Length: 554
Image (tube, helix red, strand yellow):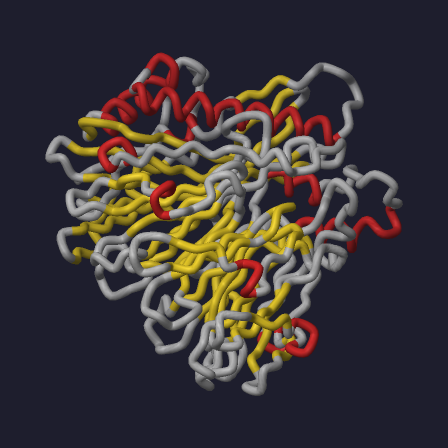
């Protein structure tokens, strides 16, 4: 099965000739900006053209005299088969000369394989520019259906080298880092909101204090899944800036809004939400984390209704809550509660992102077993004041006590080791899980099936990190004396997600790149789940929003 994908070499690296602004003596930063804008503009063109199969759109911009002197033909060769899924890797064939017409034919042959093209995407990941030379790393991702109805995924990365010749940039070299194809995936997802009758739209909270420092801040939404009525069917609870929504799962796959009859106050907003049976009556209760409004604890009455017991339970803190997690930290048979707080960015601006400790402190509540809780944060040693967003309990050292991982938007992540006596020790550095990326989520799972829980932090990735490699780029108010150290730190904050492999001795190893688990773009959350039931835990990383003005600027 021969697959020519050599067309990518032109398509990815257009323009083959990039004309400069014509301004003599232009700074390197301007050249870099010009080149990056040209490449990123093409990513949008490629995505549209590939999906529409518009050859004129895709091939037209390629120069008629384009010749790839190092051009190879490529062939997809089968490397594995399992459960009806065929995995291919691209292999280099004989040398060929790539001109405009051959490029067009290769692309025609390639898209002719597909009955439907669902997505064609190219993204620039990194760009380094000197006065006469530029290096770009690009990521390719295509999803389609073949004429047999099988799903096809093509994805890979490629390096391109440009050379400045006069007032023009010319592509002189390119190299595929990898190019993989998966055919026949049995498991796939479809949008089902309408079919399931889930009518939900996020609303922003009117309580959030807007300022010049936070002109577009949003309260976020929380979602939790649990069987609140114990009928064997999962239900969904959603909380956002305006209202709370309880959706009861029906046997036919649809959901019904039962918020009113369940007694859920739809006028009180929330940010994070969890199901947990805090009183051990066998019925899952609901805890809502508020942002600039008090937290709420709803007790499940066991008859399809809930009662607000916040005041009696003593967990109605009003602050800048982000999320919460439950675990029996002292093994007394009752679930204890940890609440992650953020900060009031309208009044307090974070310090350096990698060490900010000026947000609101997190809170640990001990369950007293009588429907009430006691704040033991200070005694337990878990009052982290980073700009927190998520937490997760897990027994990473197999001592039968749940340990705690906390991720911060600003500030270093924290791993707390449970001492087994109601207190915790900061084990972040000793365990080797130091991470200063802009953190959004925490996930625990055994991805390599060795019986040890591994740790996944969801972080921000941004193309803007190439600025930190530019010796002519300076941060405001920062002199060149401090530039090197600060730029290195800033680059680390935007490096993407982090996967730590549990070594089994209380320490972890960063395997993000070798496991290809770092590139989740601007991730807000990441979880381990075996979605295809093959016995191996996969990772689902949810993206939050775009990082730039253009849709392709991720």
